Structures are given as C-alpha cells and as structure tokens.
Image (cartoon, rainbow over all chains, first blue to last red):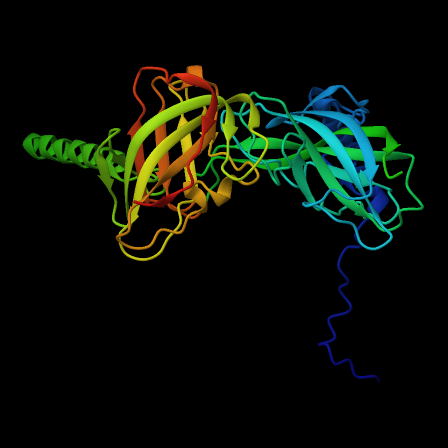
Length: 211
Length: 188
C-alpha cells in the first residue's frame, strides 16, 4: 500500500467546479454579463464623444494666418535661409542659418520674452525635431530674446543652424506650441503658462537669401 | 443636566468658531510667496534693506536715443524712461526686475533693446554707498502711464517675500517727446 503524505482525505473529493464557460452568476452566463457591461460603458462614453476619434488632429495652418497659442497670437510670416546674422548668430563653417519669421503678440496681460519652445522644425536635414532654436531676435534692432509688450505684435525671428549651405531645404514643416495658463499648483501659487498641446502644423516654402 | 447640555453646545460652537477663525487668519500660500511691497513716492528715497531708490523723473518718447549707439530705436508703443538714483546698502548688486503695472492691471517689463544694458540701470553694478544716477526704460503705451505703478526688485526669480519698491507714477500723463535721450548711468 502506498503511503499518502497528505493525510489521506482524498476519498471525499470536493464537488467539481463548473467549467469557466458554464459559470453562471444570478442565472446568466459571464459572457452575457460582460457584453452588457461593455454596452453600458459604451453608452456612457457617448456623452464624451463615444467612438469618435479622440482629440482633433492638429490643424494645418498656412503662413500668414494667425494662430492662437494661448499666451500668444502667432503668425508665421516667412522662412528664410541666410549666410549669417552677425553679430547675434553665426553658422558653423560651410553651414547656413534658417530663420522662421513670426509676428508674435502677447495676448496675456503680462509682458514676456519669446519662449524657446514655441516653434520646432520637423524633418529638416541637420536639425532634430526636438532641437530648440539657437535664439530669437526682433527684426527691429537685432535684440536677442526681446521683451514683448502685451498687445503689440512684434516681428520676431526664430533662428537655427543648418550644417550644409549647399543643401538647403526648399520647403519645411514646423509645429507651433500652445500654452495653458496655470493659476496655482499644489506646491506654489505662482501664476504661469505651461506648454500644452501643439496648436498648429504649418508647411512653409523657404526663401533662399544665402546668395 | 440641561445646563450641562447647554454648556456642551456652547463649547462646541466656540470651538467651531475658533477653527473657522484660525483658518481665516492663517497665511495662505499666496501670502507667504508674494513680494513685500515697500511703498514710496516720486522724489523721495525708498529704503529697502539691500538698496535705496529714488524716482527723480518720468519721461516718454516715441523713439529712444541710446548713447554711443545708432540709430534711434523705434517702438510699436512708446518708451517710458524712469530717471532714478540707486544706492546699494550692503554689497555690490544688480537690479534685474523692473516693471510698470498699469491701472487696468497690465504689466510691462523693462525693455532689453540691444545696447540698452550698456547704459541703463539694469546693466549697472551698484557698489555699496555709492549712489548711481541713471534710467530704467519700459516700452508701453503712454496713455497707460496715468495711475500706473513702478515695481522694482533686485532679482527676477526666486524672490518670494523680498522687498519690492512700489512707486505710483501719478495721474498725469508724461509729455511725449519725439526722441527721448538716455544718459548713461554714472556715479553722482
């Protein structure tokens, strides 16, 4: 006779549990319950847009159209490539500079300087999509990172370096960052504008001013 | 017994009132972060622990003439020039945060036009006990000057509770010249 180490109570086997498919709760199968729960959730979600694609796609905005970026009203005016912008910006040897000229109006009630993350170049050879500009300047008197007056639309250029002056893009894509006003956080009470969603994509022809 | 109940009710009420009262009296986050206003008037010295400031004059112009720099700078609005005298009290220091808040709540920051920091007071290092006369320049519409307030602080960041010189600029609009000239900041 074999010894069983577990007490030998095997004779009274417990009642066999039903298979998962056959499991019933209050007389209805789990499958029915699951489907009903799904239908109810879907019905509730209808209030928030249901199965519609979440979030609108970033609007394509042409140059010359004002874009509402929260803290600013941004109008992309033109994109130019230049040999240099002395004394503020100088490219590397054999390189060039690309400038995105914007009309930038502070719509907030406090003046500020152009935020470096406002514009990003997308898919430009030699510039990563995440690269911040070399800097910003006004066109009026070559002031680096100029203070902007609320409600006065100033011409401001965002400038990047391009590595090769012989391979200049003829058309570029760029994104415009939106900002959201933050009254206070859990930690402090400083009012501030924080980056929110990208508010616009724009495809702009590049004017070649290097020659 | 009923007297005891009355006493209990009274005490409960007193504790509740005390809780609400204390909550109202406790400083909020905003109270312990905002700068501490040090009020002054034009023509009089305003004392703060680290510097003294006197607003001598307020001028305005459509264009700004910066010494040793051409051409005259133009603006979408106007240049408001605040002539002032600053004396550091303890150690060499700079003044980085200058702004004017208009009566309708719009805040204009000190201008940073190219070449301006060579001559204005924000580009000057103040040595202790040596008064320096010069100017702050703010770009703003001149019709917003009446009722506006000049706000001056040493630092522009991490300045919770630091003194902020607050000088009302009066109710009269400044005379607007075609070109307002700056004089480079210098010891008096």
